[in-house]
Length: 467
Image (cartoon, rainbow, N blue to C red):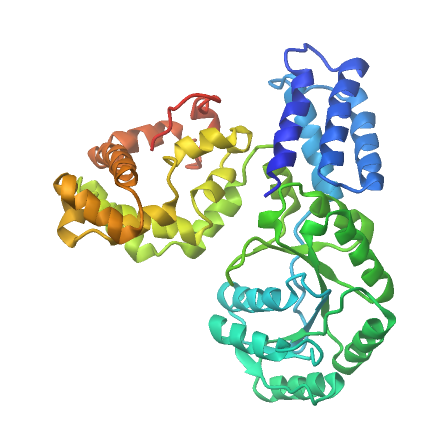
């Protein structure tokens, strides 16, 4: 997510490295590079101008804080202004009303509207403990109602049945009455999508709004459409009382232009990001965290939250006990790989760690051993129970059998075993207490990890990763 923009912004700040102070000349050089980076990311021109005017104005009169060099001071300023222009602070859903709180979701066809509703239902159930009802008022797109019903079953949410022969106004009115009688906390309404915003679409949504009086009206936008995403959302916001935006497909948008443009152009907050195809791939939008990730600073808070939500605590505790006894084996490695897949894979985790955004892709590949985690899981699945606990047995004919069973090559088995040996050594260090001592040195007086004590991250071209 935003890989290209992160890399370009990192290069922009090189103009200030080695400078003793901020001057008009070197600030202009840095801003020129930032402008180029934002243009390549397909950020709207009006947003770029306003953003850079503010940065330049504040940079020229800025006093560099003690302990920061000019480059760091400029990055800090860019982060502050970037956070402000994409929303300032997180704006969650406002569900403070007499239940059921009605949330109406609209969007163009292909933007991921129906999938986003299912993701939102799962989010509200699991993170906020809400009782959620889904209903589809899309009587035009073939199988739209069936699609939402299937997704509702996947996320374990109740679905209010409707038919293509029903009028959308009647569907939503009946669904709201049912939600009131059955004491649902939230009613999520899927509306009809169109290939473009037209008068017929707007008229129908206005009727639905008057019928059910939603507390939230969200517009789903495909981030892959760049500037068009922001202008489409603006047209919708001008016609209807929009309360927020869900930006989808951000996992496939390396440029990031839509995320930086849509808040300023529409005046409406981005409330959620769709970060993948799975029903749990929805994240609340935190402008400060996104700004940090764009500038290569990572997103430790989101990483911690994600680990807390997606890691199986019982399995993690069992693995920790085995590690403490120096008994880490291939079965444990498989469990760790599956847990990482739950959080988007190793690369997604690395992107949220401080400094990792600046590391070239080929070096990241070295860090994860040059072999995909799904392939590693397939390889371990093809092993016997005894082979998983006694990796030294895996030689010759056993490697060939495992390769055939997993659809891989013997050299892939060799790579996995080599990586496992490295991980096993690290786990033995953790079990021996050396890792605890090292972590104690890295932890501040308040018990929070102090990343300044971690030393330098591996430089491009190095191969000093723990595994």
